[in-house]
Image (cartoon, rainbow, N blue to C red; front, side, top):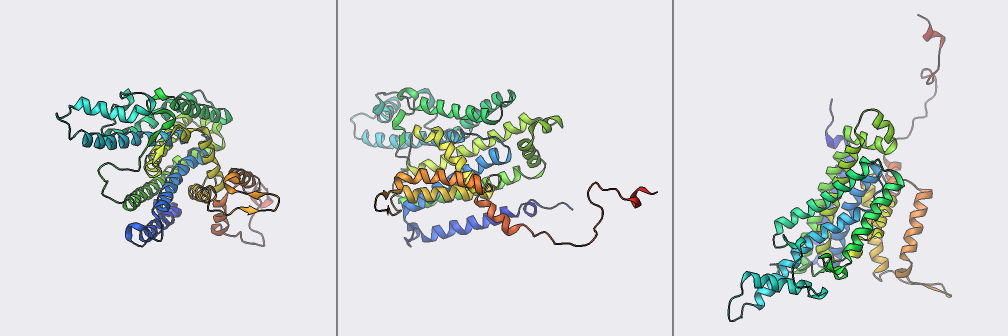
Length: 409
């Protein structure tokens, strides 16, 4: 009898239930409902954390399940943020420009409006015209398509070139890191078309919603992030289950043997790499409107290294482990670096956690790797694994044993 998808993956149902309860609780306790027990800024922090959990799941699938240690997935996350940020800046600036030109003696032409918008956006880098990559910035629909197409095509081309050359292991990790570094260095230039080091700012101001309080907007983005995380979890749970999941795990464990069995390994790896890149970009498109700003530093290779650390601490090869790791480290980072953690006075030295947080994170990563390789998610194994029965007596021949009775006709 064929079991249902939920029966094969009970963690999916439990995860969706926990996510729903958590989302409802945050909504009821937020300022949007008048309760005010959770501030709007913390709601945004929680919404951003859900987005980080989504990209952590994508990283877990590509690394924990398929064995590709990508040190460039945060680049796709940033590209998704830039894609939606371009529309947010354009539409917001357009409203300001049109309002300022409304009192002009002569109505402005469309070209004058566009030129004024370009001057407002790019004046900070000494430019006054829209680059070619802003051709679709006026359309929300087209920019949403860019959220998927640009990172997806980059991952597809990069993955095709890398996998067809059969680059594996640490060499592939170095290539993904080099791709991320090259992209971030390019974006730091003022003539990149994305305002260089200034990045895109004011993304929290949603065009046309000036009358809507930030508390309501923050809850809307929080729920959008929660829905995206839920859908992403179900999608990847389906990907890593069944025959496809078995092949992906086999590629991780012994790529040469899988290829010898007749499977086209490169196609599976390219599918996983591209799909996870697209999901990472969607997570970034939801993250940065809540953060309010994006700049090239967000795409630096160190961000992708942090992502790998989250997955390792949470438990590689477990979707819920990636969620636990990302949420735990992200919220802990906000607490330590936001000044909430009290300083520790040792008498001869005072520990300020804003200075020591990265050291603590590094030590935690090393400790988990050495002493608890299954991560925090591995604790669930101690709960769900059934104990082995202490059986006594003769239960048949040992594996590979030969008995006289079996040799007789």
